[in-house]
Image (cartoon, rainbow, N blue to C red; front, top):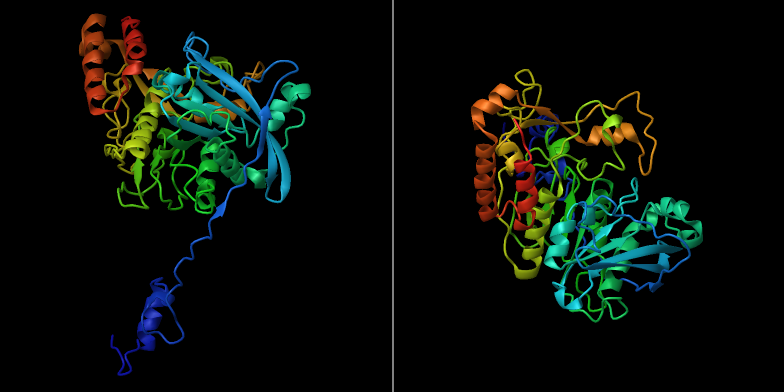
Length: 455
């Protein structure tokens, strides 16, 4: 190869570069070619504050957070749930939707931190609250549900109360901006409280809404031109389309996503690129521990996993809130190890001797195992999927995990007695808590599960 005397590449070099797939516009010195223009930042605008008023009667209230720990709901843990009707104009059209605020009954217990979420459209559920409820209420955080989609299901539940709700898909990001700005404004129902920071959390379909909001985050601001949301937590998302934002982000792909290779994005503390990727070993896309009203064993062929999502998901939320509120950088975590070879064990992941992923963020279920955790539970063709809240049964099975017991002889040899198994679980749990990978609020739930084991 040679460069001609004018300082330009020869035609032969150009041809080779083109054949190799090199972007010619990025090659210096090519005639008629210029480097790509730098990205033009959007012009920030103040998000309009929508109208808000209490949403009362008639008839029953739609419960969007029915999958909570038995006996540990808002009423038992000193929280109150308030509904509001929010209306405004987004994407050029009027909308009306519901806002739900779950807050400590005693305002003095409010932590100053708010976790907002768009409602999941398929289940019309507030999964952010469901998957973090014990942690949120124990810490005194406020949970805000913004019903951007799925309002048709709510209206069908009680047309007299909710029949006027109306939201279109094109309005989602603007509604998230307006509702978030409302929560931080003097018109907010919690304006008298000392709100410091607010993050936006999503899972699966609602996680896509969060990620799709990232460009709007750069445009819509509060009246003082500060950010509406101070951090983002998209979970059950493979991270394939993350727009850079100027606030911390923690991405949580589950085993459904990372078993097929999730994002290659790397952890960063660089301003404007603050990111953590947390892969929890054995974590399913859909919780099947506390969601049995929506998904029951008869719907799926394999035994539903009893590994709960919230002791895992809440770890990511806890670290994000500390990051945005106190500037404490979250710990880095190893990714799940990929051997990208299926003929050895049928998986692209590297599996341990019990069939669970190697690497990732650990937990007692995979480190002191009784089961192998597999994703994509096949649906039971004989199931009708009938019942309260049960819908799209094949999809729900596909997104849930299932557990295969380790052979009794292996369990007996490994642990000896149930009491020794309990001791090993508690030892490992305390290690995880000291490392920040398990929260103390879930300690007794995890230990009670261990104490119930018989072999």
